[in-house]
Amino acid sequence: MAENLKVTHYRNGDAIPNVTGNSDWSSLRTGAYCDYGNNPSNANTYGRLYNWYAVTDSLNIAPEGWHVPTDEEWKELEMYIGMTQEEADDIGYRGMDEGSKLKSTSGWYNNGNGTDEYGFDALPGGYRGYYYGYGKFGYQGYYAYFWSSTELNGSYAWGRALYYLYSELSRYNLNKRRGFSVRLVRD
Image (cartoon, rainbow, N blue to C red):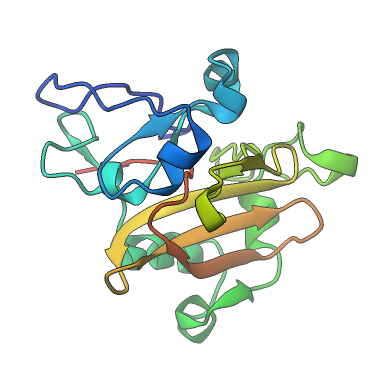
């Protein structure tokens, strides 16, 4: 998809809980979403933020015909736009300008915009944290974070990040309780 996910219900129609309280968010081990800053108008531009439990819930966050990309599918995209297999398999910021090729041409702090060569139109939607009981929001305008559906272990899963200062694309293992954007891939 060329925009971040905005759904509030799983595929079967069950509601995904909208968790607004910071301490409530940070202790979750079940699916939830929120709007950045608990401001619903942010969803119009940036989509919603989801924890990994919502991303991988068996009720399915993706509409029929779509799915959350795996880590391997993210790597396929990265190699298609210029990374080597070795770079794609690495951790941290990798490649040369693959991140810029995915970033939107406007909306990034301090003119950290991209070229959006592939119509991905990544916007800096920020994230929601989980540290020490505080589910605080941060870095809207500076970072775009995206989940994959691939688990690393009981607490961490693979994701991607774009940063206004860098043209590279980052691959990280991130705590499942964080709130990130989601992009979908057609089945």
